[in-house]
Length: 329
Image 1 (cartoon, rainbow, N blue to C red):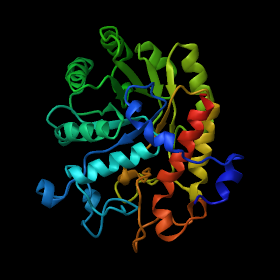
Image 2 (cartoon, rainbow, N blue to C red):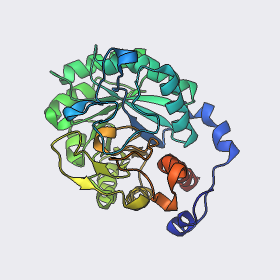
Image 3 (tube, rainbow, N blue to C red):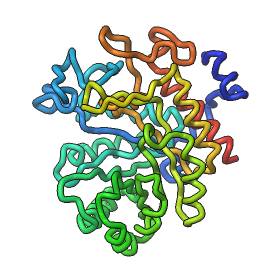
Image 4 (cartoon, rainbow, N blue to C red):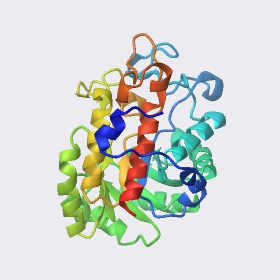
């Protein structure tokens, strides 16, 4: 049962319906209204021969990990089919349409896991997109080859992180060679850069520098330029255990997440993107987290405590996605 705070925050009580679950099989071929960023880069000795990412910045897993929070699933491997399938079912249960998988180029660990991740996502009724990260020697030419490769895997939506690493004219040349159904989205709040690069749309990803107050401006500029707009909402940010980044965006027991969702719905967005499902390093994850001494938890979010609080953010995501769907008729 959801806490009374939800009705107070939204002004209307929303509940999941059986129809939402039964419609999951249709979601992969429907227009994408919501998408969530997913990271397949975690490893454990039993599945991958060594810990991967959990040990970042001096972490000593399984007890000390590079995150301010601790996963309810424990220290897991992104190569574990059981784990990945459960994660995709969890995402699908929120009503989100698309999983945007972090991808670091051919031959990377994320590339090796892409097939597993995509198969599990599609089995859960989700659409699959690629988040093309700034891998070494990335260029417009290599991205063109990446797109051909991803198309063979059935992926047609491509989100390009940090497009300003390359000149806009390079992206324009690439995008002029790309035809439907492939769509390229630029991660930026500078709509002029995306327009000059002939991208199909923009998304923000960065929930610290590009907060909800920027969404209306960005989407207005995007639509004026004929681009799609996918502002990114997130629950908070804390990367201090994983990096030298000392910035913190407090979760405020769920208030931060709610305020970003409200701003996204009021911005005229074509789709809402979510940062993130499981970026544990930066503390933007909505994946269930459990109480563990020395780590933060979701306790108190929307008045939930103990075990009930572990799933607070995935449950709240389902509420907001339903409201998004209702707003689109």
